[in-house]
Length: 467
Image 1 (tube, rainbow, N blue to C red):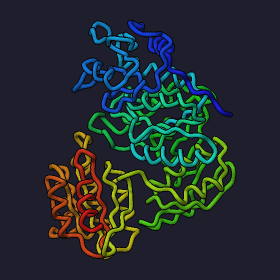
Image 2 (image 1 turned 30 degrees about the vertical axis):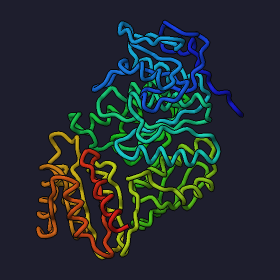
Image 3 (image 1 turned 135 degrees about the vertical axis):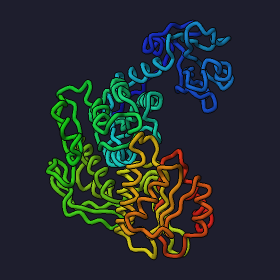
Image 4 (image 1 turned 180 degrees about the horizontal axis):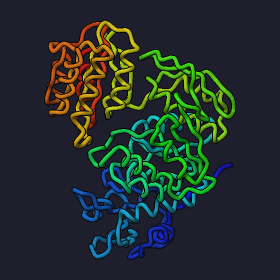
């Protein structure tokens, strides 16, 4: 059934954000909502949020010059426009953005699917959206628009009246998921896993699990949770959820379960997947068991929303990873690069190394950047990855970053990798220079690291020279 788009009139927006119209016509219609004057569209409503390094109230005139029909400004700043432009005054502009998103979510008839976890959120979001788009008009948040600013901007797109929204919820501190869940009020919630990501901000992995468990908040008996049965920390917290639980997994009994798993290395992975609606052989070009778990989570959502299993099977076969998240890049001279440079944590890096172990190649070259935000356990966690690199038979190892990355290489040497086959570089630019000379015909190259280390620089260098 076609739904009517939500109309952003000045009076509707003012009521939604608890603001007061200072200037302009209360019937003024806004065509879009934005917070960045550089990308603002004519007819838009500009919300002047304040960030760590900027104050949006300083750019009200720029917003008007860009064609904004209205602005939301903080009280007491005097940042009101001249002319016919609508000005809505609020106490806190960031809270106003969140309130507007919540009002749009409430006014929309769309189902909202929200995904959290230490790893795999974006891939699970993209796979879920792909499965659901076979039956529904689907909106998904762009890239990693998953925080207290990005999520509201994404939810405001519900004004276009899609059937389903699929969004991810990110966090690196306790209380953040709670805020996002209150804004989104998800009908279906997905919890992918618990890992060491952002451990530097928490006292333990259990504390991370408790923060992720904020996704339970506000659930009713009709709310559905799609949860990882193989993750002990998630399983231990499931009794606290007040809605209905659908589990997924490989190693333990689950409502959506993969058995007879066949890992084909860089050619993908397949399994027999059993659901409440039957079973099917599902194969995907996405790499490794971690991505199989992402597919299982997405399958749980799709089955819940009535997508037939044969449609899921067909769509899984043509999935492609999001940019820099396990992309397989084939270069000249049969050089294959696994570009997983978007981000890294210890568990995800070990899983990426497992993919190398299941792939034949002349040499296996791992270029691993430092994994950030791991706190006091950073060195020991890097050492664990170093031992994993040695155990899977990496032929050459390059590490990039500070002392923890250097410790990764030293641990690999201690675990049996020849010292002459391990090199350390302070920056990705230096690593790219060395990789250019080192990589040879037939090599399989894994490139992975936290965003702050910029291992994508190495990917770009190899693609430019060997593409």
